[in-house]
Structure formats: C-alpha cells, structure tokens
Image 1 (tube, rainbow, N blue to C red):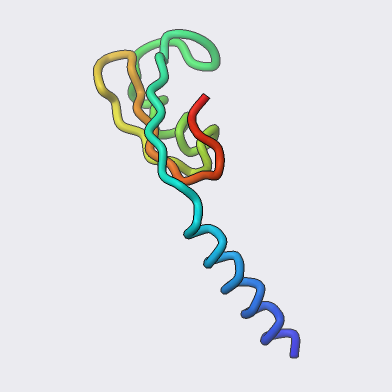
Image 2 (image 1 turned 120 degrees about the vertical axis):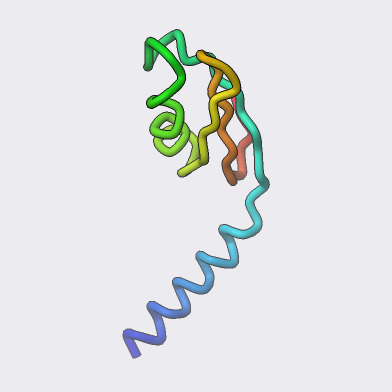
Length: 74
C-alpha cells in the first residue's frame, strides 16, 4: 500500500514537472553573488538559482542559464 502511494506521488510529480516551460536567462557574472570570470561559477549559479539549470558561458563574464520552470527569467 505504501509503495503504491509513493509510486503514484512520484508519477504525479513527474507529469507536473514536464508541464513547465523552458527558459534561457543571461546573467552578468561580474556582480554579486559572484565576481570574476564566468567559469567556474556559471554552472553552479544556474544549478542553484534557476531550478537545476544548465549553464553555458557566452563570453568571459556572461552566463546563459537554460532551465525549466513556471516563472520566466528575472
């Protein structure tokens, strides 16, 4: 019984998480919370602040985060 309830909850969360939109968010890495070049901070920043997003450096100081969420980049 407990296993069935946990499985149902997991499947419901999986279905709901797939309904979130995907966003790209570009951030300048020269200001707070990080100072310095984009790497190695970009991936850590995107993972922490943007719902386990994926970070890619566009240049030395611009980090582009790709993430799934119900709220767009701010």
